[in-house]
Structure formats: C-alpha cells, structure tokens
Amino acid sequence: MAPARRLPRLLTWAGSVARWLNALPMPPDIVQVCEYRAEGFRYALRRNTGAKLVTRLATPTYLVEQLNCEADGKGRRAGIIDRLERLQTQRSDAIISPTNALADLVSAKWDIPRGRVTTIRTGVDFAARYDGQAESALPAELCGRDYILYFGRLEQRKGVHILGQALPQILATHPELHVVFAGQIQEWRGQSLWSFIEQCNAEHIDRLHSYARLPQNQLAPLVRGALFVVLPSLWENLANTCLEALDMGKPVIATLGCGFAEVIEEGRSGLLVPPGDVLALRQAMLTLLENRQLLSAMSTGARLRARSFHLDEVSRDLLHFYHALTDNAGNGFSESANRRASVVR
Image: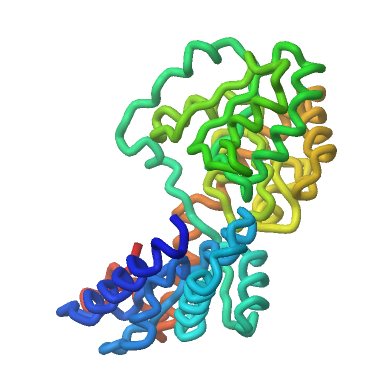
C-alpha cells in the first residue's frame, strides 16, 4: 500500500493503540511495539503509566521502499512515515533488534547511539508451524523431481529478478532440474516478476513452477522436498524463511552484507554471495548441484544451526533483557501476578 493511502490509517491505528494501552485497568510494566508503520508513536508521546516502552526493529518503511525502488515520487508522506518511526524509536526506553546488521543501519540513519540498541535473536516455535494441520502431500508435478526452491514474496528487494537471470545456464546444464517459486507475486517495471522470470527462462519454462502464497502445511512439503533453498535478497534483516529452511535441513544460498551472515555459517549451513551478483549466485547454485557430498554435509549443518534459534533458547535472552529493564532480575514474569508485558502486533 502506498504511503499516500496508508498514512491516515496509520495515524488512526497509532491513536487507537495509545488509547487502549492507557486505558488498561492493570497497566503493564513493559510495552513492546514494532517500529514499522510507527504503531507506537502516539503512545511514545503520551504515556499515562510508568510502563517501559520497547521498540523492536523489524525493517523500517524507508528501507523497504528504498530496496523496492519505491521511495522516489512518494514525497512528503513517505518522509512523514519515516519521521514517525524514528520518533517512536528515539523516545523508547529501550530498543531491540534481531540482528547487528539492522541495528547498525538504523542507528546510523536515525542518529541513535549504537549502544542503545540491544541485539536479541528472533526465536521460532518450529514445532507449531503446522498450527494443528496435517502436512499436505507434495504436488504431483514435483514428485520424484530434483528441484531448488525460493519461497517468500516475489518482489525486487528479495532479489528474485537476480535469481531469474541466474537460472538459464543452471537449467541448460542440468536438464532434469526444476525450479520452484512459492509466494505472492509483485509488480516490477510494469510487469509481474513471474513474467520476467519466464522471459529470462523461455527455453526452460516447462521446468519452472509457481505457487501462490501457501498455508504452512502446504508450504512445508515444498521446503522438505527441495535440494536447497535460494534467498537472494538485496538486503535482509532476519528472514523466517531462512530459519524454516535450516530447521528442515535445507542449506540456504543467501547474500552477504545483511542479517543472513549472522545466521548462515559459510560452507557449513549454506553459502553467501554478494547481493545483486548474478554470476556469483549462479556459481553458488552450481557448487551445491555438482557436489552432492557437500550438499549432504550442509544439510546436517543446517539442522544444527537452526537449534540456536529455537524459541526456548531465545526466549531466555529476552526475559533477561526484560528483567534488567525493570530492575526485577530475581523474579520471572510467570511467577509474579502483578507484572505483565504487553506486545502490540
């Protein structure tokens, strides 16, 4: 949604969040909000309680639009959203970030001392990925096929156009290989990104497969059946797609200079290439396709690496952070009836 259309809705929502939090009969000790769309900026300006405000960085609007080349022409409203997100973050009692890469970027852009931002990894409850649903079967057209997988939004900032350009030689030299894309398709330069990928690979179009955004129980078999996963983002904070792939034992080819480098262990759980580099991305895919022993070793390494991001591991770090913030290091939240934390989502 363009800033011109979403700004009034953003302001209304931020006001509703502030009124709801200030009206709670039992005020929380900690309120955690995301910086994206500045949903906590009104609360940051007017707090009727002594609650500590924590902003958790995701990916600021300015960065999303910059990576998708959408900032030009959005003018004043885009600038307003950026200022509101920065205002909320600057006025927070504490700031947390899933990666050092994002913390460094936002601190420099918004003139926030780097020491104010604490890095706490994202935890994932892998066991709950199916939400009680049985895993679906692999689509019939992929059964018995070797394929590589991209999953996530098909948009410019995810580097999908780079992957599309890297594939022709891969498909030409590996005639039995298929490539699967799973995710919502976005427009790019006046056409859908899927159309661009098809144009790049017109001679191999019968081995390209696109699936719309899928529920987890249908996505899981696609990930589980892939040889490896390719996530060629131009920049990324910390993609859940990467963590999910690693947990299923799938090596990930991703990009340097962003949060991926804090997750993927080069040569052990995946490979990292410069963002936007078609040749480097192609070579990384060839490396795994032509060395199945390395691919197998990385599959083991991927599962081991995912353990570091299990929810029970990461939640301890977050609780320690909360305790330090409230000067209540001796008591757990679950053991104290009068201590609560509110998370605005």
